Image (cartoon, rainbow, N blue to C red; front, side, top):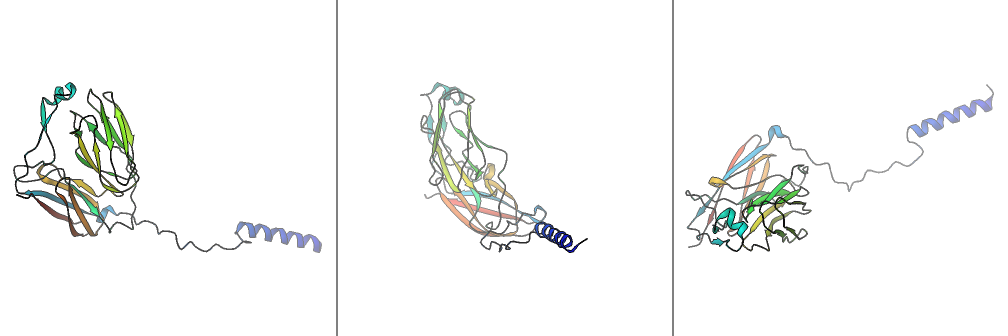
Length: 259
């Protein structure tokens, strides 16, 4: 092989190696402004919160809701039903309190949006559930189970407002929330007594007190957290707690009704 051919062969091999190895260009510096990868939650050492919400004092008597004006409402509930501002058990336990992890503690983590929808039903001319939670980006399905016109009117302060009519029994429509907001009120402009609330969070660590005032927040990474309890009339209370590995922490909140 003559010198010219040898030189040509060497040049071609060098070119192939340069392209294959990514040579020939400047190496880009790492983007120091990029956010670090979110730390995954290890279910094997996660903890739980279980608690109760109680009420001290005598709450106002529930208001009577007269439904005679709409035959479809009256057919399901009778002539009257009661408001749900205070749902109190015989032991003083308080239901419909939204309890959630607030503030720092989860800032270095991200959580997948659940694929299942959360349903808000209009049944018996009342919203069900009265208080509930949802994650940012999760689907909210609103259903009309009544044979009468309802409209779902959300009046948030951070998220987009929406007001949609549902004139036919069985109708549904879907919405999502884009921002964290505690709480988003709902009302029905057709039936003025109907109201509900949703807490919108970017994580799954929330619960609502039910029968006996009991709530649960499960599979929480170990750490220190601020926990807030919200009631539509009585406001909020907060506590700081520490959750250890595989630990179940008991928490109690007591709201007081002024005499």
